Amino acid sequence: MMRTLLFATIVLAGTAFAQFTQSLDNVTQAFTNAKIVPDVLPSFSPRALLNVTFTDASMQSVNVTPGIQLTMAQTAQEPQFFFLANVTIPPNLLYVVAIVDPDAPTPQNANISQFRHFLGGGFSVDSTTGLLMNNTAALTDFAPPTPPAGSDPHRYVVLAYLQPDNFDSIANQFVNASTNRMNFNITTFAQATNLSAPLAANFFLTGPDNSSSTGTSSSASPSGTSPGGSGGTSDASGKDMLGGLTWFMGLLVGILLS
Image (cartoon, helix red, strand yellow):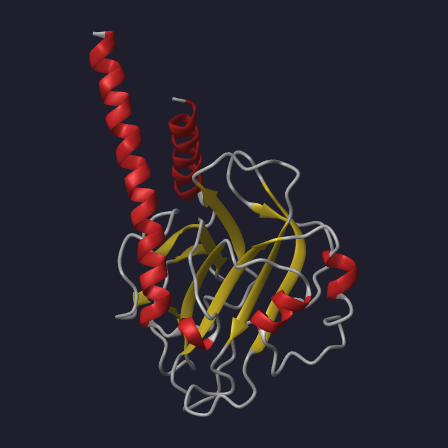
């Protein structure tokens, strides 16, 4: 009986690990298909998953899977970020999160890209839920997507980096509350502030109201890439998403300890 239980546990853990690896591969492929590599990043090899969750005016949660198309109303409020890695995350590590638009003002004529929609450091990971939490002021407060009428949908790229010790003092030399959001380059900024390659990332599409559709995925988005479940709406409490995230994190830690 014990041998059977041990074997079943090993099989389950191995399956979860394989699914995690496949999810990383799916995210990587989605970034390539959407030309985020090389338009935003020269290359991308994620080591963790980044779930992005918006809450709309009706208090519905919208979980982002890479390439999902969302409306301007769905993305009007600052999202929450959830981090999932296949290793135990030390509690003292901090992270930098950025959201950039490489298609501003339009994908047809992106002459003011990248547009910086959010940039903040000092994020830590809640060990139970994976939520990235921050109590410090952002370098650039969140600005919601507002693609102009007539534009094709824009790509909005969300990136998470490990924060180096000297980030705060260096970053303020390049970005502060008065720095223009236009013509930003996240790769140049990362190099200047000693950020390594992004650990995790996600992206979504938003067009002007007449071109956006709720919860639809682009052809660049393979399925099964979100650690919080499939893209779409759910109750704003996020209990199902957080429960699944917590279970998966616990299982992955168990893999390492077995």
